[in-house]
Length: 419
Ligand SMILES: Nc1ncnc2c1ncn2[C@@H]1O[C@H](COP(=O)(O)OP(=O)(O)OP(=O)(O)O)[C@@H](O)[C@H]1O
Ligand SMILES: [Mg+2]
Image (tube, rainbow, N blue to C red; front, side):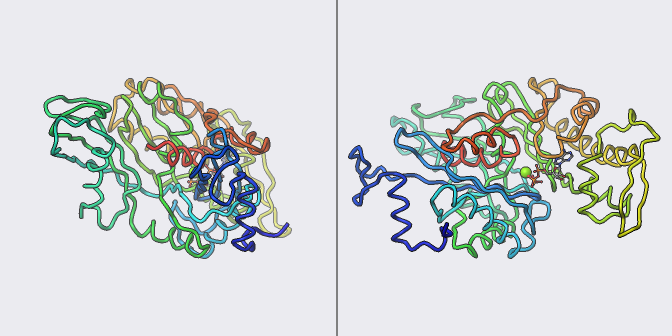
């Protein structure tokens, strides 16, 4: 099959028309004018993998995931693009796989990143000219505009804004002010920013592929959209994604985001510790980790050994218990930092639904037991993603249920249904 990138615009339009039965005047077969198919492409730019999803609206108005591509990530360190060429090549490979399945080449993309983030509070006030007119979404957008015009974040990129409760004149604690009337509308926004250079580097990767980087979201916020349920967000829950580069955390209570943080340790640190301990190169240490690492080392027979090939014909024998011990030490450190970060912002008993863990590291054998021991609250590990979208291909549908793809799925949700 011809790579889609090589199609002429004419052939590409043919592919598009074939998929959506859109005639040359932009009408569907039902005769609706201007119902142009809405395509969305998203990419989870992780430290260890890049996942691309392409979705579109079908004739019934449902969102369908029509293409999926995954590729090992290179050139991303701690969520930051540090080698533009390498990352753009990996993104291209993931995109090619997704576009081949989708039969559609996106010209823009929405990305999720898991770099170091800063969280700010920004209080905005809007004095409305006509206090008898109902408050609309436009008024709320105006409040938000103030953030983007502020010089406070000039060397940072605002990648997520979410309003806390609103006040309309003397009435406070309003969750949604739309439809109310009043003169003074105010709220405090929670903003998540990253360094502007992080965004620029990713933008450069996309530009090399002739794709516009339309928006960037923090990966943990995207994952929350596809993992957490409304009652969890209302009653209190902490979502923790321990990936290869970072451990990202977001705490929700009373329907709002209370706290978010990126802790700069993840699975790669465990692998590096094992590499240092065994003298193995990173790639081999990664294999040993996936095979033998455990979150609790105490019950492993102290005589169990593993024979590993350090160099050609040079073997080394290590105790299985030692590998688990190395992994446990780093996991304890990460979990302690998560515990401290949560405690700084909320009393744990207020997180009624406890902690929900996703990210590859939480697949470590006995992880849940260690997490419960350290954080001393309810822990759920690797829940199923919410089935938000229909999928045209059964093989995609089967994969989408895996929380590994929660960030990419959540990006779609953020873009389609808003924040
Ligand atoms: N069964 C397992 N046991 C232990 N570690 C695992 C297991 N499976 C995956 N990992 C580790 O999880 C990490 C990858 O997780 P994930 O796919 O969530 O990362 P990512 O999304 O690419 O990274 P990030 O979110 O930090 O950008 C790797 O360090 C990998 O070694
Ligand atoms: Mg991730």
